[in-house]
Length: 181
Image (cartoon, rainbow, N blue to C red; front, side):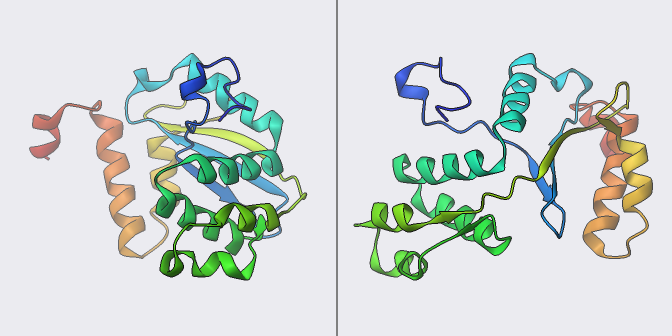
């Protein structure tokens, strides 16, 4: 998005810089930007830089950026669902007409976006890297997170916890070793 990558070529200014997961406190005072790295070599300075810039910009500017990406994108459905999700956690308020868009079409949707109200509540943002080993502040190792996640009994938590433990033992791409476990 232009705010995060203003020096990028014109044709790339409306591309998103992706964050793997965002966790928001119930009271919306804190947010975590979580990056999942299955390989210790997966960290890139460019990504660290845009995450730092996103953190500095704050949530209201980022939510506005998603609105602008929606307007420019040909993948309206993808951003439609993301905007509805942002609305469900009260980071923005969409006008009633927006909710009908998938059935009535996208013509005139820019008026809906202009009528969208973005919450000015600015949660404190922390950046967390979930990766094979914890080596620095702001990083959580797979084993540590698997221990925490393993406390939950639902199938998704158990499966993800199990996968994290395997990924901690074998670097990404070591398919033969993973299949032999």
